Image 1 (cartoon, rainbow, N blue to C red):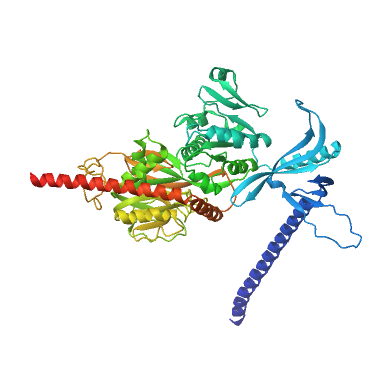
Image 2 (cartoon, rainbow, N blue to C red):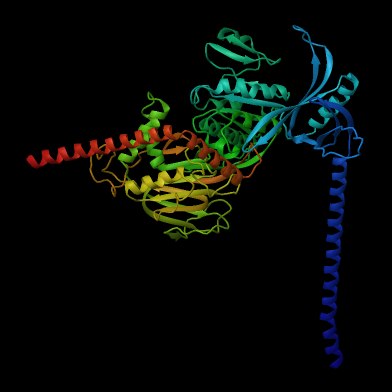
Length: 620
């Protein structure tokens, strides 16, 4: 028995020794792999930092020693030694090749000469970051040797073509009716010259107006009458109506392009994103599950607010957006899919139900007004007739987020996709506003964004539920968006990070908004629509009416945008808005005073009508 016990004790010892040996071998293998990776990285760095070419060029009025590697170009002024032997401090200039988008040979030409001419040197066109903006800059390298200049030109061209993320052929959509009809001028003045300089071919759409400004192959701008459009090849009508971009995207061959560029506002961007995702679903034969778009989308801001462009670029600047496209910057951006009654309605970035939807519906009825007056009228009118929405709100918390919602969990409902094990949080009540946003939604009116707690690609959306409150408290909540913070520090405001949201409005018969517009106390009177009535939703600034329960889920789409972080974008954009507000303080003060005067006029006029009706009823 002693021998058997000894053998039994030896067996676990041997097994533990074997395990220790295996762990040591694994550690050695992992250490060896790490060492190999470090050696490869060092070799790549040595290759990238190895000098490919070296020469003397004149930068400005002084001669410089110019070095070219695979990642950068540096130039150092050549200073002769002083007789005393004292050396002066030399400052070297550096340009990263990832910021260079074009290189050209400089020549001296006579007036009217189209080609040839004496070689003067090289011109490097690159971007320079100044805060939140990207600016175009040029580095002039002067050298009269044609052979030396051409050898440098060929090497630089070869290095620039090595950036595979940069587009070479793009499809351009322009919305001529966006904001003040400035989209065509913005593309012609800011975007087209950069595309031509970077050798980016474009499939530009043709406008349906009587005369059209076209950019020809040699970069010249010409005005073409309408009857000559039949003779122009490879042109398509511009986005002159809703859904036009979707019809064009379904027919065009996406394999020919490296990306899509949109020149317009938030509505045009959302429509093109919707078209790209739908086209990806058709190509993948997956109509039910969202598919990531095959092509990235470049956004050139030309709208009134440009929320999407401000969120991804940090600034409303067409030149900055065009440089991001030219340099091939790519950023992942989350999107939401909106489903009603089990059918897909559209894809988008932000949605508002309640106050946002009602104000947009009122604004759409006054299309004859200017955009600023229409927006002002809709906000004031909706505030004067502010009523909560009676609905059931359910959401699925995002992974890793803590929910403090004042409702109860519904164990019976589950998401049809991957999150089947997680439970929904459900609450039935009155809400003044419900917002679901997958991006921060920065704008000049909201420097921190409508949803500052979310980012561009965090894999979730932000839910902001504003419960029932008095009109004064709700106005305080709205005014906090224009300040630095505090918009969510109210007891009736709830914010959550979610992966899906369900909004089910209460449907009863016997009440309509038009019948009770003259009521006096509407603080606790909910808006209850008749059964089957469509409710207004504000989805990316577009009015969408849906009568059934709405399911919102998040998805992802690849955008050709800037690469700086969301927090940096928000911080820079916030500072920019504050400086702008201070510089134009009297103008903003007059605008706010006008809004308040009109708002109080509406309230007083409503109270006068209500008191007159009460007096007449008392007399009767």
